[in-house]
Image (cartoon, rainbow, N blue to C red; front, side, top):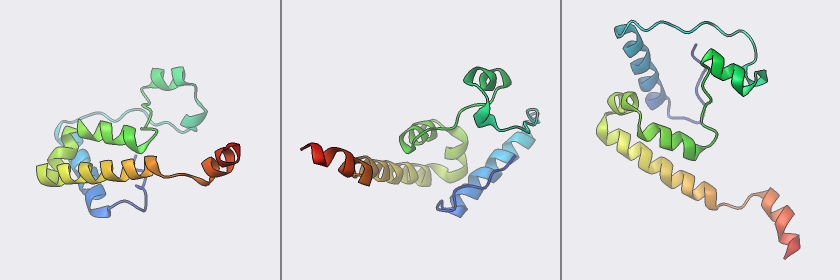
Length: 112
């Protein structure tokens, strides 16, 4: 199943990787997993594990760590774009981590 990527992503990079992954699956004659028609978020962690349903990264930091080890991402983008993409995402993530949210300001600033 293809779920449309985030509309804020770079569509050229996203669809390059999607097509590369699909082509690799065809070339390796990989079997599709059984279809899941129910809400996977409602399943317990144990049930998802039993069905082989993996958890997506929960943060940009986790996604970057996963992407750094992705052979298909590296092949699809090429070494130069792969490294530049990861470097830019690390900069973005560090800026995000350092930003104060409205929640933090409203919750903690009055305590000072």
